[in-house]
Length: 391
Image (cartoon, rainbow, N blue to C red):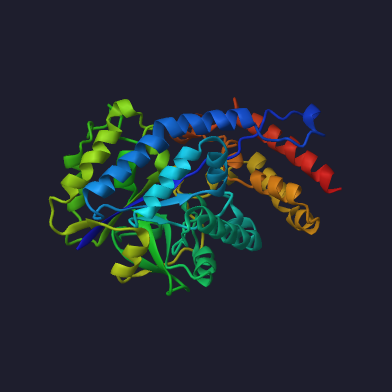
């Protein structure tokens, strides 16, 4: 049997206020009004209708349809505050027994690159959150933006996870296929699942592109592409942002109808089923080893860290925020620690990106600021206030 593995990242950051030099001295860094507005908008456009659709599909197929989520701590906190109905819907999905939740960094941070200690602490915080909110203990792991290298895989394996996710880029695979399970070098006890980025991006990015040669993308056409792996793979890993449904691809594009009918067409091939991440890790043995001394991610066409570290503003901001880790933690002040960790969220550095052409358009779409420099200034001003409070 071959598996289709749907995994959705669900994340919202705490966006900063337009925090000027003259705001230093005011410890309220985050734009509650903007964050509430976005949570309510995305809840109405994506989280509510898509969760209801997934519940409908799970009921219709009596457990044969399954999906996997990772829900960041910053998302859960904001949903609890401003859209608790969505939390109830996620609970209903988990309670079906056919939805898996993955562990990750609580604050969707880059700690796996800058601080192993903070990385481990945030993963433990996230596991506790999943237990507290959903009564669920994650068995597998996804790092922020699928950031991966040999050392991250090793650290993750020491924490007892079954599987880790990453991007199925050519630089990691070479001639090999993402449609198999692999094992990381130095960490054979954990399995590595790789995103089939071509098929995933057909849904996440190309679905509504009228200039795409395959437009319009129908459920039967896509299922036909998936069925092509029969005999040439074990699993099709379809990894994407959950906001693909209704937010990035609006309802009017037909994205919900596509998703509603896709299982029917997938099941037309008798050798295909849906599996969660940990089920895939249990079902299939590794066919090879993944060796990544340098770091990859699922971001932009480069699939590296340049989305967050590509210019001097980003590098300075990251260096400055992580260099005060020891001082923040030594103060034993929950307010300072929480605000420092909210500033670690990767989105703040993504907004500072000065990329252009195709990737630049993506960065502009997600940014709440007029320019990357503006994002940098607001961040550094908030960080300056936090440093004053440490003194």
